[in-house]
Length: 306
Ligand code: SF4
Image (cartoon, rainbow, N blue to C red; front, side):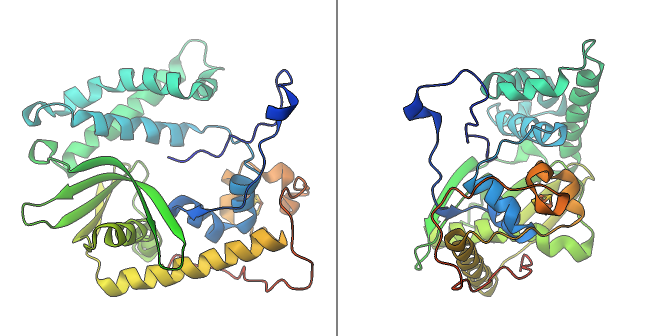
């Protein structure tokens, strides 16, 4: 999971001047989540990638991180011991590790002195972990990779990167890319948007290993659904064209400083309403040099996932 909170807004004791400001740099690569940000709202992308504005941890996202960690660690055990009780027993320890590595998540429960909310939240994480066993059988799986960081450069120079939850490789060499979601499966009409991330990963794997993954698999622990798609070369070529167009639009906005807000229902989950013009706010000064006005091509039309 990517973070975007390393901007350093100087709220604590003033550090030495030379380390107080993290210089903004133009984006150099694209991940599925940042591509999704730009498609959702170019201004949100700017706040996260260019300004690096801090965001508060959320219960749902943090639970997702916790559940992912449990599912990954379970594969450390011998196949026969990968049971639901064993997986549930990993939850408290992984929560401790998460608090150590990301102390900011502790604030989620700072107003919960008797620990009731935390207990409920941990219980929900356990239920999500348990549901996984109704969808897949980890005693019969031997992942080739878990939490695999991948990065590939396209011929155009665009760098794609991301983290794949699990890669399975069959004895025949066929590759399956698996991603866990702690939310619910989308309605069929929105499945294409959900598959965008998977096709992105498939493109990266194809570019890296010259193998088109046989299957893309989304495992929805929130609703107990599995969504699969078997990509073909034409799908991946289409995604590549889409990403190149997206990157062109991002580059244009980076150079002109013209990042447009695109209000949708998702604004309700956005941490940046206070600095968003759609909500009466003013964005911070743009930290990158801008091209002279008048040459902007305005490439920020509505961009769907495919
Ligand atoms: S509040 Fe909405 S329009 Fe404004 S930056 Fe966030 S997502 Fe974009």
